[in-house]
Image (tube, rainbow, N blue to C red; front, top):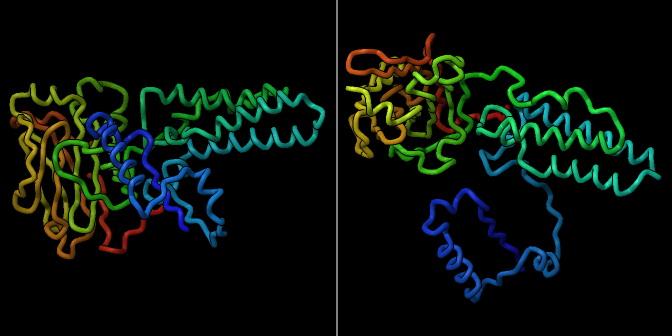
Amino acid sequence: NSVLPIILDGENAWEYFPNDAYEFLDQLYKTLHEDEDIETITFSEASRAVEPVKLPKIFAGSWINHNFRIWIGHEEDNLAWDLLGSARQSLVDFERDNPEFDRSKIDAAWDQIYRAEGSDWCWWYGDEHNSDNNDAFDKIYRDHLAHVYKIIGYEIPQKLTQPIHGSSTLSFMSNPESLLTVKVDGLVSHYYEWIGGGFFDILKAGGAMHRVERLLMGIHYAYDHNRVYIRLDFVNRNGIESMGEPKAVIQLLTPAPHQVEIDLSERRISGEKNGEYQFAVDHILEVAFERMSLWEDGYGEAGLTVTLLDGDSEIESWPSGDPLELKVPEKNKEMFWPH
């Protein structure tokens, strides 16, 4: 017998189904249950029914880009893991050296370690994801580790009293980490559509002042074997529509420079090709360029600039200095390293 696990995402997918996918999941499980060639059982039942076989190896990776980039590599991630490792080792050493210590307190300390190990804290550390609650997540994580030291009577390390999140200067630009094929519809079609793409953070690049006056908040870019994708995020779509003649000018500086001017006054979800590129405007602006139209061999480097206009008047232009440097490697020679 063989066990084929069917593992479905516990949260993100179902909001895109009617009625939170209740009917879909009900029909899926019913179909599996009624299939004559399939026996549906739980993992506990499978562990008892099937003779285990030792695996020669396990691929180290995750469900995003097949690596651990989201959870490790960034200075904030590394600091969080280091603090957890130190707290865990302190508890291991204390338990070994104090065998008569109150067992209930030892268990309580381990409970704090497990809480710090068992949740996705490092999803929010680093510059990949942000929310209004990052500071709260940071404090809760450090509180769990601080309680370990408190329970066993150790002094709480100074580093646990200092925030992890925002502890270092973050780059305004991150490079792509995987090949992406984007549906050009002017919408973030699903949460992971642009995960693994490059990103230039306009709000950080422009500093903390006058954010309310900005209309653009970020520039994304990605590529697959055929196309290069550019995405513009608006601070407020209504702010764009309130302008007289809002236009976005996207310029790609290649051996044969490309400049595209797009009217932003209307929401147009069109997938129609316009020469060597296509675009769509809705909540965001998405533009797809054919790689062969940008470079003779379909790969190379390009400088990217984005300008927002109201008629002939420039409202804002990014980046403020040299163009963003985009690099698209030769097909099948892409190398994406976790860093």
